[in-house]
Image (tube, rainbow, N blue to C red):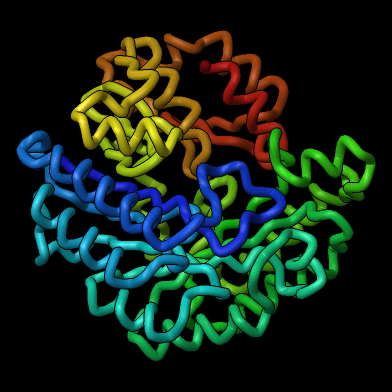
Length: 382
């Protein structure tokens, strides 16, 4: 059986964060939430029988904020997934993750998630400083986060991931180091996703930046935050396994890793993306089109594209290079019957000469400098 990942998008939030460009909003009423989950479960039902030969290895509920809706809606959705897709309940590697906002992830909901079969939580912290959380538009405090971690531990979770952001308006290097220190002192935290702020078009931060109201750290300070963060996490047993991801041994995100390994995955819900049978597509991000499409059996997919062999080889390279272990020519040869040292001879030579990648036998990976200029490396293979 081939491995399959499932991503389920929950677009609802208590409040839209100032930096967020994802498909998400505050629902106008409870009826809209109910209608969405009815549509979502209808979409899931359409996949029954379409993934024969595949077994689900990872499930990820993201958003938006899954914890902003009732636990019962999540439970019914999990049950629908169990009817439409093949699972092996005895699989020790089966990973089921749900995102939790400390402001809406109550102890009761977290316990309910554990009873549903979730074995991993991703809790959004972003920063340990309450004044920075207000700048970001978050609806929780540092103490709310610690209470959510305590509730997770009490419910039996032993694998919790936290999100951290750096390069924030008004953020100092000491703020970042204090955030890291707080996290490494919580035993339940086994994984960290650490992102540099990117001001996205259409967000509140985008408007404020154009108005000259967004005081961002300079590039040199932002890079120092990143490198000091890496060093401090390593001292506490968190190894970097991807540009933005760190974990204790064995606690790597299997779901995120499937994206970089080109494992098939199906995105369910508004705006969710899929990669299945060498084809990429996304669901519409328009709520009305999504609702009418499922109600009237119209297509809800947009931008469907079957990858050519050349595109698949490029994806193998630039997605694989996100990981600290890089890409291996032996794996490339096994998958494509070719060698990337031949297919990308000039590109690899140039990147080696510029010090952006290093070669270790049949493998190439980003150098420390390459981590800072990763997009420049990736463009060589697109």
